[in-house]
Each structure stands twice: as structure tokens, then as C-alpha cells.
Length: 420
View 1 (cartoon, rainbow, N blue to C red):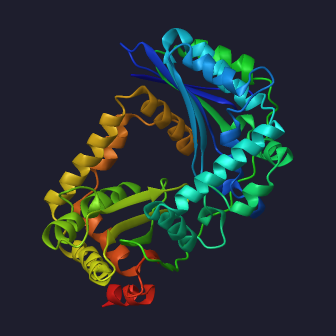
View 2 (cartoon, one colour):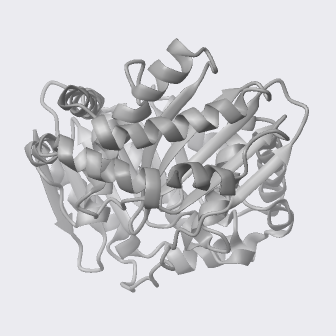
View 3 (cartoon, rainbow, N blue to C red):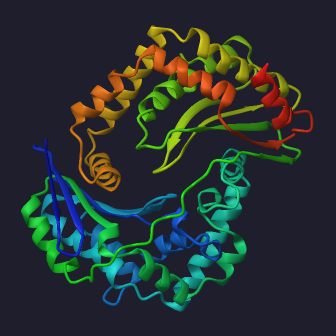
């Protein structure tokens, strides 16, 4: 595999990874502009803008955008996260230039037609409604809001309904002007791609954009708190979050290994103790999410209203026990799961394109896979136990509850059990 990185004079970056034997290319543009880059009155606009990207340009209608890619058997899509908005496509090798032309067109020449804005406004409002009707979706928005109250990092990606109802063309165009400068965009491609050809094409399409520095996002500060929404549902949903490492923190890999060992699979502690032995739930898991300057280790479970107290107590007990007796075998298994997930995922050119784009955004370069694997392998049992102690007893916490949760413990009670 061969990774190459180039930077145009205006700061626009191109990163590629050639994968011999493939006949297709995955490529896209990753923009360092997501939910955390919005001001309060802009909440939801990054996601709204992503929707509008496919609704027409100065040279193509919405239908022509879709047909241009699908006529050659490819696909095109986009997503918005808290730190990134991505626009990407997968096509055969011969159609790489076409895919880049379409993606550059939707980014550089959007028309933001008033009628299309109204259509997508309705679509997004339906999306918000669907999320509110999905307990194991909306609970994580509430958890994020409690973890980072009054901050962009804590606001929902979909946005507040009132904002979505009033956004217009000027709002969308203004966000593009603020956050879609050349130094905020990375063109990434993997598969049957020729680096020099792609750089020349990028120079023609993006080289004329004026260079400018973007304002940094406001720093995130994990505060913690409790959201409790009592409702007559079949299940009580519980989500706990503990302040953890950002992806530039040396403890990042330790936090990932810990989350896998605690609740990342069927052999994990939470799954074995709470589901397999006690039968208290169907779904329970732990995961570690990281951002540029902060992170969260999150635990989620769903159970009956009369069992949620026992489930919460057992969860804290398992976290505390992990600090005392997490075994080398468990840590080795978690490391193996993490490495396998990474390496298996990178058999896909789309996954590789996303990885190298994110590595450039985070580090300004693409570390060798061997370096990443070595960092995972360097995590020791002692490292995991030390982090487990911090998360079980000292780290700030947030909690969200949804469903028949009148008998669920409060965050203060959870904290007391952590301290016991």
C-alpha cells in the first residue's frame, strides 16, 4: 500500500492510497466543519448543508447529480458528525475524474434553491421526529447535552426544530463562507487511484480558492449532569458517560482497549455478568468516543423499569472490579479485537479513504499502520487497570434515562456507589 500526501499553495490537501488489484476508487472531501463549529443560532446548519449538497448546482439539477454517478454504476453519499462533514463516492477506476467533478461541483457551485430548501427542511424535521421516536438514538443526544452543557459539543447534530424552521439561503451560504475554506478541506481517495493525476485535477478545481485560516472551534469541557425522561415505554433505557481521552491523548488507545474489555463484545464483562448470568437485559455495551480535545467512555443498556436500579448498580460494580482484577487475558483479547476491527475494515477502499482523511485532519500526516498496531500492542494490563480506577471512581460522569425510570437511581446515587 502506498500513501501520498500533497498540499496546494492555498492549503487544500490531497491524500491518496493506491491499492493494487482493485478496479474501483473511493474518494471524497472531508471538511473540518461539523456540529461543534456551529454557534447556538446555527445549531443544525452543518447537517442541513449536507442535505442541500445534492439538491442542485449551477450546472446540474438534483436528478442530474444522482444520474451522473448512478449511470456509471457508482454511488454517492454524505454524513455530518460533530467535527467533520464528508461528501464521498465510489466508482470504477475509469470514472474517478467524473466522481471528483461531481463532488467538487456540489461543494463549489451550490444554488440553494428556495423550493429545494423547503423540501429538505421537511425531510430534516421528519428525521428529527424519527430520532425522538427512537429511544436508543435520542438518549445519546441527551447524554451528550448533559456531558457538555451549554457548549457546541453538547448540542445535537440534527439541530433544534426552531432553527431548522428558519434557516434560509443566506444562513447556508454564510456557513460555507465561514467553514469551507481550502485549508479546511481534504480530498482523500483509495483504491485504483493515481496520486499525480488526482493532484492535477484538484489543482484545476480547487487551486483558485483564496487561502484563509479558519477560526478554531471552542474548546470542550466535560461537566456532567443528569437527564431523566419518564415515559410509558416497554423498556427503561440507561446511558452513562465518563470523561475520557481525546484522540491526541496518549491514553487514547488504553481507553479503547478498556471499553472493549468492559463491554465491547459477547465475552466482555458487562455482557457476561449482566446479560448472560443475570438476564437483566438484551442489549448492553460500552464504547469509547474521542474528539480533538475530549472524549467519553459510554455505557448503554435497556431493561425493564423494575430492574434498572439493579442494572445500574451492577454496572458500577463491574467498573470498580475491572480496576482490581482486569486480567492480562482480557486485555490481550481486547487488543486483538481492536486490531482485527481496524485491519478488517481497511480491506475496503472506502474505509481506507476515510481513515487517511481523518489521520491528516488529526495529525497532518498518515501514520503507518504498523505504528498504530504497535500503539495498541503497547497497552498493558496495568494501564487498563489504572484507567479503570479513574473512570470507576474519579472521572466526571453524565447520565441519561428514558422510559419507565421513576424507580431508577439518580446520578447522585450512582456517584455514591462509585465512591463506596
